[in-house]
Amino acid sequence: MSRIKKLFDKKKQDILSIYFTAGFPALEDTIPVLHALQEAGADMIELGVPYSDPLADGPVIQRSGSRALANGMSIATLFEQLKEFRKRFLVKHAQKLVSIDVEEIAYFFSDGRLNFFKTSDNRKFVLDYTMDDLEAMLDPEKYFRISRSFYISVESVDQIHEYFGNRLLIHLKPAVDKEAIVSREKVSDFKKWMGK
Image (cartoon, rainbow, N blue to C red; front, side, top):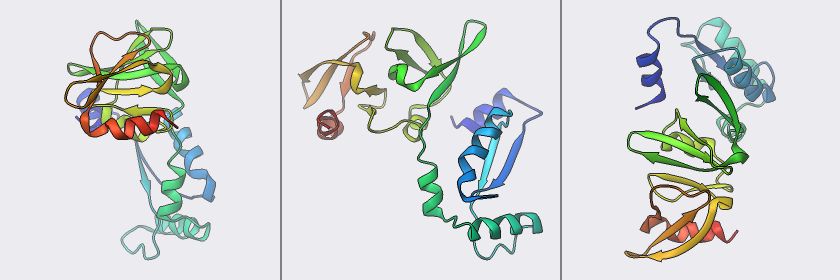
């Protein structure tokens, strides 16, 4: 289920959706503006990519797009800016919200229809993102998706064993209740990743 569908399933009214132009008012403002909008409570953010012939846009968006282009914004620049990886996850714990630094997370995993992560000190939290969502959020130098069900950090790998079907069995720390198996098609990339 997409995050937008989840939002509309959970919140039927008073949804705050914000549009802004990447690279406006200054080229390096895109990420700070994104963070400020998130912190201010925006439910959805539409990021506009400026282009040279914005005839279908209104005058305000035309002006912001022209300024962003003059600032040097391009699709390549935007994608480079958006490579910033998540530093924290805000999760529910009992009756409160807790912010967990990504560096504290040993691994992410799916169990049934829910996704979780475990911290290196063995705390377990439910995650509001899909495993596919995590791909854009996590630094690939630090986390590797070994299967449809697991993203693991280098530090979480305790032992690696060969497993039938040309796969690998990973013993994680802290321990997990299900088998962490590197899928056959990911074994070669996993070995390269572990050897960096």
